Image 1 (spheres, each protein chain N blue to C red):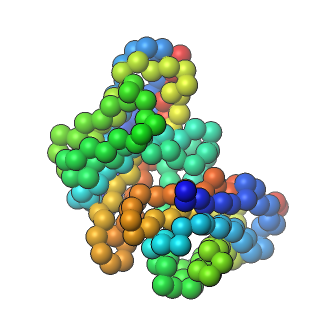
Image 2: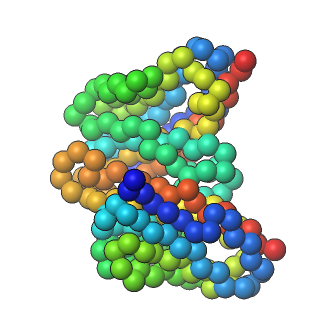
Length: 116
Length: 111
């Protein structure tokens, strides 16, 4: 089945120790998103890639970076995690186009990050 | 700016129907979505409706859209314990394919 996969599902890191979360997709979608979600609040968009074009949200801290080496993979790098960065990180994909289902985002299971 | 609003909690008895409501402000909304999130899990797309429709039914789920009032609802018939989750309403517009999210409604099932 085509899907969005996130690894690891649970990640524990220490305060200030860099961490990388990964996302892969078999949907062949050209847009990939990273969201941060805290305490069952609505997801907050950090950034997205439209093909190779990177789009950063204005309020995303510089501590968060992303890489997309190819269509299938996207990485979220947190350079110096703080206690406030503990959250669920969700990856999603979409294929914006005219017609039905064009804007629909499909989510992975998420990675829960704990910062000690 | 654009906004999507939902009640934070809904409590229903098992076997009853649940109706989760959502209002939005963007009159250029093209698609409106319902996502389900179980504890500790990702977001599962339940259903979506295009803005030129007023109703969509899929098994136990019925989505109603009142475009004039900018009101969207999700009805779950015969609510089961497995329906316990947070339900997020979201919309996109012609000008921007990104999602605008509601705060989520936590559905609590009473035995």
